[in-house]
Length: 315
Image (cartoon, rainbow, N blue to C red; front, side, top):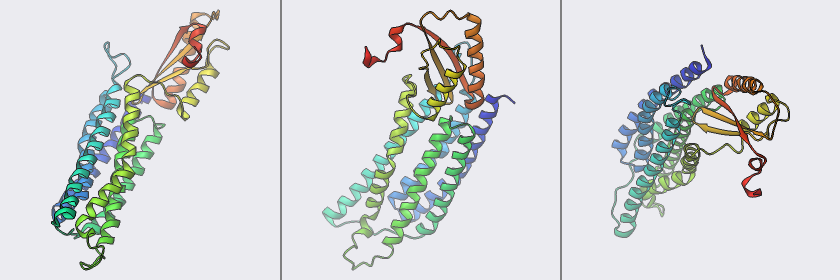
């Protein structure tokens, strides 16, 4: 089995497992929301339902993104980056919409004294199950991505979504436990009516960072940005330096990433006197070495002058 097919199988199976588990969790979340009418639970359930729908889309993308053709000689890995961008934007929009709804509900209570007390019902028991399943699924997706040397953007975004969902479930469960202990004549009785606002606000503040970071990563990949830091960049630079013809490159290879697809551009500086066959053999050897580690890699030597070796701030 080729490295390409093996990585696709690992990724597709993990995405399928995640989709099935999220489907069951989403149905349970909607049922509990209909019983309690707690808006934070709607956000929690909506996250899970998004994970189910996007999981089906990610499975389709996983099976087609590495397919090469005359029109797409490097594959269609941009689909993975586009998927990451679309899903992270959707998550942020869902957070904002839910926060707006609970804010309006809390405002009505504080302004007009109207509202309904939170119905805790089966929330605590439900959230214990959801937190357990969520973190187990998160750990599973992370392990599967580690098998692929953390190159799968699809598994990364699904794991991040699962972690956010599990944290939300945990926050809702803790808040529900606290609210359930507040009597109606307590000075904190207002939390019985506005508790879901505070739950949603805190959860949004502590979890919005992840989809924002995913947006930034996806945009960098789609706009052809290079990796400038991290273990992957350092390891690839070391391999390129070790396996390129001696003293012939600038040793400042540029690594472009789109989803699982990597493209390594290695600058050739000055007149090297190295035969074309040597460059070809080196490129093949480097590609095979990197493909064993990262799966989908294209290696290119780029002819440049001394001026291209300097960074833009040096010019």
